[in-house]
Image (cartoon, rainbow, N blue to C red; front, side, top):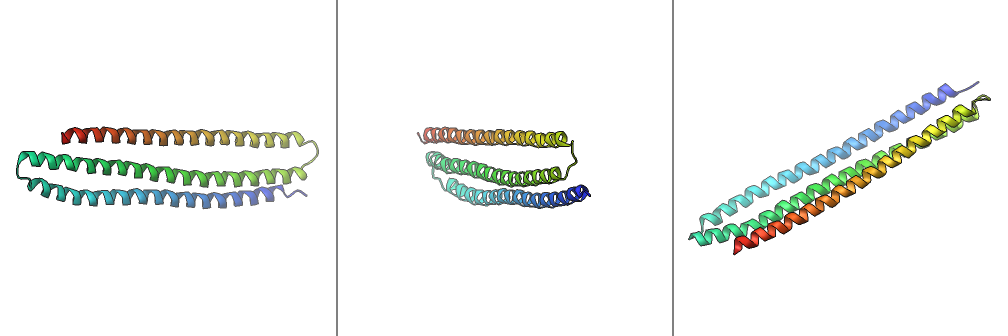
Length: 187
């Protein structure tokens, strides 16, 4: 007698359990990323308030317009540096969170793929004569799905790498522009 329905039922339960575990892990990783962004924003708000109070005191203490503008220009560079550092930190959090999510998804897909192939191999051992074409079709479909997933993964990684390069380039350009603006303000 064939145990195929029981094998599929057990495989379905195992895959559901693995999916639920992966979903929980990915949700936790996403919340960790959001938590890091919230912490970054809170730190930014706290330091901005402190810096604003110090800057206001320095500007109010200026004795003449020339000193006022000199103090104002001196405050521009640290503010620009902090804004750029914030952008880098935000990009780093997004990149690391995305990498962790991708890694978890890839591990789940690889494990599910391994189990499906093992199940198909096991079922094919007990398959009735003449079902070789169906089994070959199922194995071919699994192979095609895996090839498609690998291409999607490769394309996604390339897109993320391109985004990281663009963010780094933008931050460098902003840094150069800010440095030029600060040097002009000091003149």
